[in-house]
Image 1 (cartoon, rainbow, N blue to C red):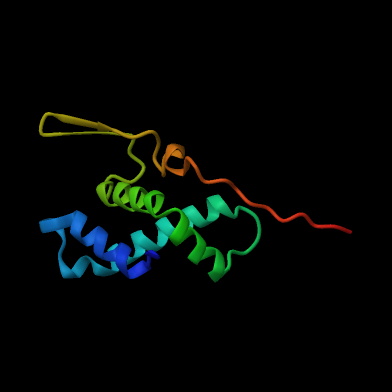
Image 2: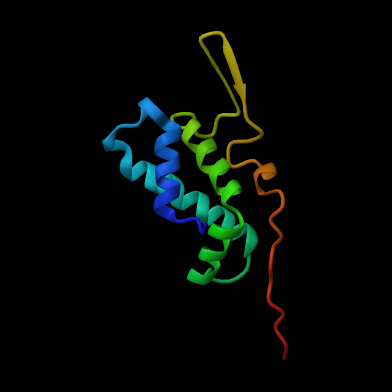
Length: 115
């Protein structure tokens, strides 16, 4: 089954569970769109991405997209933080942005330009 943006939004809303409110819908959409773009930019780092490339990454890398969007949802309010301590629990992240390990398995593609 082909993955869609709307389905990824539903997945993130389900992931958020009772923490989700309707007022967060635009934030959830932005997180999903950013995750798709991050994967697309990792796959196609050169040039302007196309809609065909967007569809390809949706179908080829849905687990990477899901991990990235869940990661960024969990970091809401903690942007730029690499270690967070709350209620006796410490959480650490690789870096402030998306960890490189989330892009594992994505091979960059580049076009060869001839003269």
